[in-house]
Each structure stands twice: as C-alpha cells, then as structure tokens.
Length: 116
Image 1 (tube, helix red, strand yellow):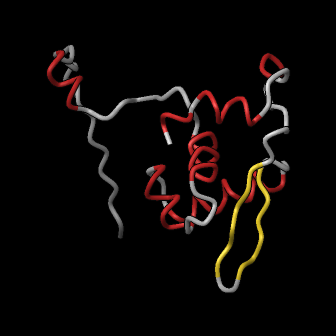
Image 2: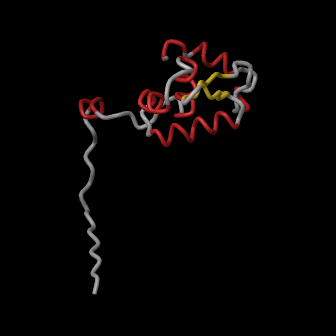
C-alpha cells in the first residue's frame, strides 16, 4: 500500500531585502531567449550549439529548438560546413510583433551590438 503525504505550510514570506534582491538572478529580462540566440548568431555565425547555449544561459536542447524556430521563420539560415553548421541572419527580415514590424532584424542587431 502506498501512502501520499501532503505538507502544507502557513509560513508567510517576508519582504525581500535590497541585498537579497540584488544577489538573486533576475526574474525577467527585456529580451527573450530567441532574441539572445539571434544576437549570439549575429556575433558569431560559426559558434556551435553548445557555445550558443552557454552564451545565452540555456540548455543545448533549448538552443536547438530556438535555432529551429528562427530558421523556420526565415530569421536565420543554416549552412552545413563539414560536420558543423554555419549560421547567418537575414538582416532585412521584419520583426514579428506588429508594433515593431516597421523595423528589421538588422535594426535590432545594430541596436544591441554592445550586448554581443
């Protein structure tokens, strides 16, 4: 017979101090992982999936999924070179969100060049 135990706590969270808040990782960022991968590819088209994943802070599996999304959307192009892939961005491709569609991927990369 299997017994399941449910533990319920009534402890209230205390407000986080400024010191504790500064030491924790941010809960959100201005760029999505897709944006970070796009910037990483623009900075180094010969980077491996593992290098892109490390740079962005995601797993290699997540990086592959994002690279596939970007390739399917026409934002990057993948070319096989021997045993590795080479990635290029399409700088003329418009951004996806309707409020940003007047701008291109190239505009975004230029604006974020210091992050790369």
